[in-house]
Image (cartoon, rainbow, N blue to C red):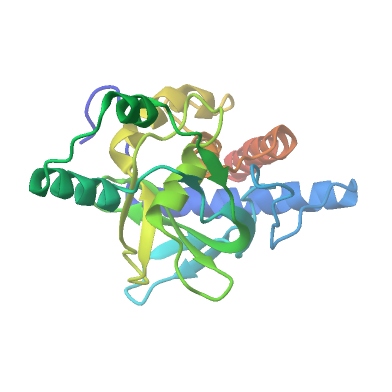
Length: 265
């Protein structure tokens, strides 16, 4: 049972959310394509700092019958080798500490003035194309959806965790996800990053009011709207988004689907 001020899903409700959202997203994508605003499935970020959007989700089923979503590979430019020239790595700092303990090195006053001068630091950047693999899995522990992602270079070697964290944290979104963790993907077993779901139920509760169906009773939530709101909430944490146009068209279609289902009853 969900605690006060939180909202959770069952696996059955999650699957209903997925079914409705995929149908509505398909409508929104086709609508924009007819309007000349089509979005490529295999998104390529137009700059190192943005993604064109994660909306081409596909439904898959695991060996145990669990439903999950995957997204076509997204190509992004990542600064995979940024470092400051003249600054010491943690290993180098440890080495100098050991040397200071072993040798009593003294310097005269002139040397002290030289040593005390701050050394200029220079940032060296190495941008390269990387592949991002996103998936959405329902957590039976937290009873909420969880976004997983894996990042690798074009030669299939994995990117360093510090590069991923630096990339994801290097943006101006104030209300972003604070916890990016790493573990094996629950379905594929691949080492993956994921947005820790500890705050998901609380944030979903805040979004629940916007997910009400105006044509049904007060307790009814339009299927798909919670998952849509969740995506718009968490995607900025991985430097992506759902555009206002896509969100508006998708949300409108979800309301239409719910209204049609209600009339058919």
